Amino acid sequence: MKKSLIYSSFALLLSISTAFTFEEVKCIASELKAELKQLLKPEYKYDSSQITRVTYKKEASQSGIEVPLFMGEKYRFLFNIAGLPKDIDITIYDKKPTSKNKIALFSLKDVKEEGKHIYSFEPVKSKKMYIVYTIPATEEENLKGCVAFLLGYKL
Image 1 (tube, rainbow, N blue to C red):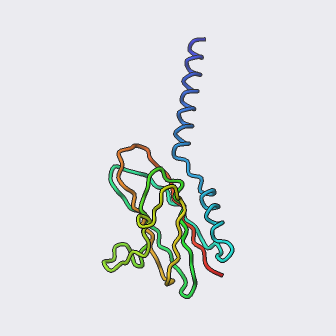
Image 2: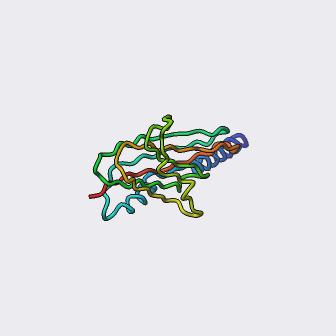
Image 3: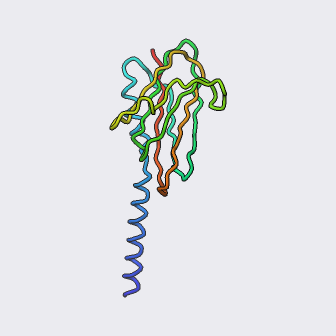
């Protein structure tokens, strides 16, 4: 009797701790994207989106997306950072991030506002662009989140 009580208590404790672990790193991509889609209307149409999972580590890291654009079209880039537990920097370049002649067209650190979690950028020229996510170093363990990127084009 005592053994079954101990085992069931252990199982309950394990399931509760597992539930808290999953809740901590939960990223509801559909909600982040739905919030961004509303900001396209009425003049922009949905083109594509990308959810980037972010894992914070002891050393800083980067992740990126290549975004091909059709010349002559007008675009809107939207970012939702509500799924991040800590700030990251988002930079949009006109050339590959490894290029020496790249120009930063947008940087989140230049426009970041306290309490705001949605940011937009409308490029002047339509050509291939590169989004770079810079994730800062942290000592906190198991810190994860996500950022949503959505691309819209003008009708």
